[in-house]
Image (tube, rainbow, N blue to C red; front, side, top):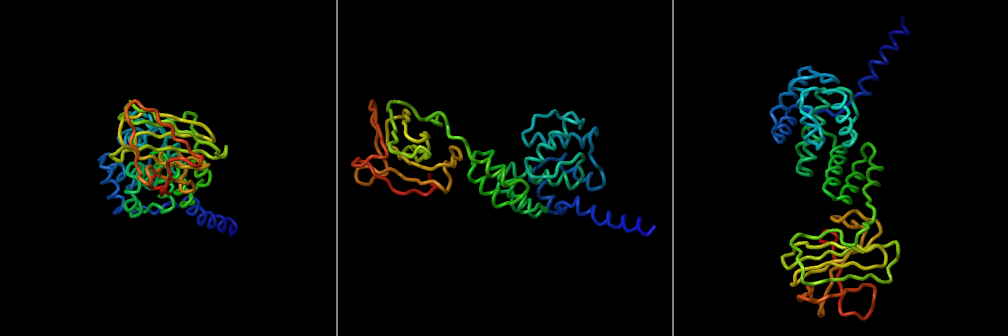
Length: 308
């Protein structure tokens, strides 16, 4: 009998540790719910605090609220109030995506964790104080923020946030932030870019493992075109006649149009006519700008990655 008692005591000590989660608090969650501004979320959270548990096959208004949360995350789901296997499959998908334990139930803690992650998904870094005050782990917040940054196309920032978080499978997530080099040389062009001028870029003497990205800004400092050349090669775009600033980035690891090569790249602003950081393109002309040659009539100044 003594052996049985000791085993039961050990289990009683181990079980809380195995399922321990974040310690969410009602006052902090109240602020999170206020930011999300959905009565059904508030009502469902209160019901869960009082002991309600959502399980596979449940139905009703609380099941609808769960489905609405998943839809807010961007999932394709019907709000029919019937939380079957399909609903819980999508729940587990979101839980995996945001570094949560996958569950086959939703209680107050699970729902609070979902709501905090949802606020980060919607507001990014602006949600930090709210979710931390509610009880979300700081490392998990950074993991959720990384997911938001990646979904916004800021893959280098996402990589840094994953690394700083050290949460769940952060290393694999950080590594997955690297993008393949684009196959097309012109990877983005503003609808207001216009025509009348052709600008060609040529990269010579570049290491085949190094890529080059060009960003073109108009006189209002608005980005109008982004071009990419892997190794040696050329790229071109059309522009309206006018005055432009040309910025160049170089690197090996590519993190997409918005973050380019991250802080590990090298960045420059082209200069013309002895130091001007803008150049005037005239209508009907074709301009060829070549890097990797000496004796040209253009120079460059180092640029900060954040201003690229």
